[in-house]
Length: 109
Image (cartoon, rainbow, N blue to C red):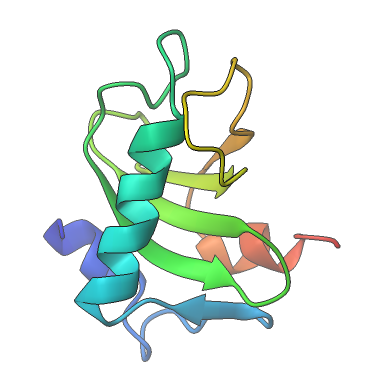
């Protein structure tokens, strides 16, 4: 994980709003990162980018990823759980800028 991502999600520096949950264990992190790679097809803004799963919504299939090479550094992605690349704009992606707490708090279900 890039140091900037770790610092911005540090529990003391930036708590996450409900229902967002930090991803601290490597197994769920690896699973979410692998699923994103399956779903992202050519033409999607995250295609070919290195990502790190940082947090997930406890009520839906959205995940906060740290992104390499994106201007903002963070992407909120709605995974579809397909077993093949989706057609852009799926998986739905919104790039976020700090403060992340405010952007994630606006997440509606």
